[in-house]
Length: 232
Image (cartoon, rainbow, N blue to C red; front, side):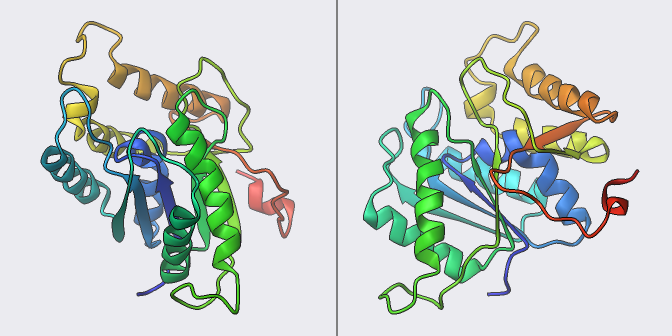
């Protein structure tokens, strides 16, 4: 397949839309090839089913105009960074050859999110190995950034914030496609979880002097050719 410019690794279907839906939409409007690999089905949940989650996945993917999406089918609620899971994700990296990977931040109350972050690190390293029995040619994804999909009541600092002001409604449409997870059975008085998602985007937009934004964190330095690259 044609290499991806951006690959979002999501512990469950809906994590990519909630945390990076705006970044995905902005990237697609720039004609970048964007994919999502969901690690688990996300089921069982109180109001979801396997079939319903598949339908919601398809709807959200259409709204964001994703170039590629795949589900690894790893176990929901008991996701672990096992050797077999590492192999499967490393082979996804070799097949899609993304220039940038977005992975969950490594601190969270949800153990699946913590495991997913570790799994991305491990699979990224394995993806580069030669003289292995992994499918595909060796590949080192050059840039790994982390997005905040967290259940802890914390406010981590971002390395960069992407302006998503022009695509906020597209992001929110992709979020509300997940009715089984974010709408059904939940209180509808203000503030709803949908309100919270929009308000977080509004906060991050405020931090950069824009209407809406989405944050990313980088553990390493990002090189720039000159300060002109960050002048507005």
